[in-house]
Image 1 (cartoon, rainbow, N blue to C red):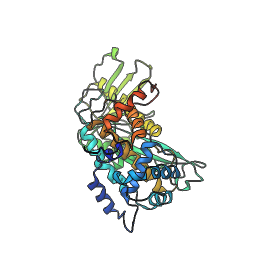
Image 2 (cartoon, rainbow, N blue to C red):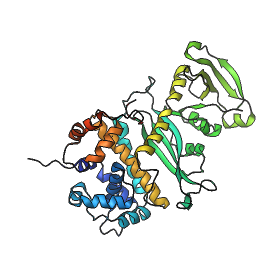
Image 3 (cartoon, rainbow, N blue to C red):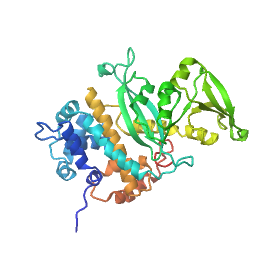
Image 4 (cartoon, rainbow, N blue to C red):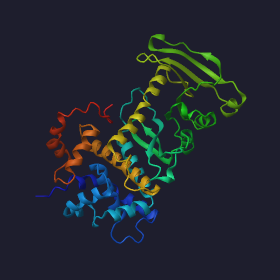
Length: 389
């Protein structure tokens, strides 16, 4: 009778080990590493994310308690908090940033047919950034304001499946709009962003490279109306105009025409103005597209609540970025497992169940069946649900 591997070992089977080794070789991650390899480090940090460990001492105590089971998971070294701390501080964080990319590609392929809240064949991305607050006395390299420290997470989220496709971890004071310089634009894709990204020179690159954007207008921007299209006022639409920029400086930055859609939200009665370079979609679709931008804010709130990216196991910049990238890899890994196994459970409940069954020798789907009933009566109404739009 075959022996069922632990739940943790089953999860690691979805990790592309060959791709990981390429990343390690690229940055010489295992150079002079006698016992504790980059793979050991990744698995230890993934364990910490999946089980909500509070500190390096906590990780060490829990893993040593199951030391006989670690070999079959893939962890060959004896666990010591000093070893993990040293690895986090010295091994290039780009190993784990690069390793996240094949996981992201796999997840996007699995979720490519997920429905949007509008009927579109285009790829739709949402852009946003969030601040992760730090203590200035502990993280002096991350000075944000006079008495504060922070790093900023700039993210491009594929709305089909809420998969982060591009992530940049920068100093907290870096302007959100500079993230547009890092993007390789995809022709035909639609990029949704708030008005903090309104920079006409940068936005013109979308038009030049056959991509589309939807954003909010800013106060003080002067437009000249060129043509008008009829709208149905019962839907909340107020106007749909083709406009041009008035000032010479703005016209030099963005010489092409723009489309301005004005809309009143039927629920909040808030008046909104949208700018886009897409003249083909219905005006109401433009409004609904912008409304879907809330998914990237939901993503940020979710990972801050359910992953360890607000409290860190190390204080150096390398340790912080390593932990963030491994946390994102774990998020994408669980999304892959959920889709591959067709698990009918929210991501929140899946993580909760994994956290208490990692070293159980049972199929993952069986663990959900056996343990899931314990969560059935749990009121997770306040939890942020992803992949269940």
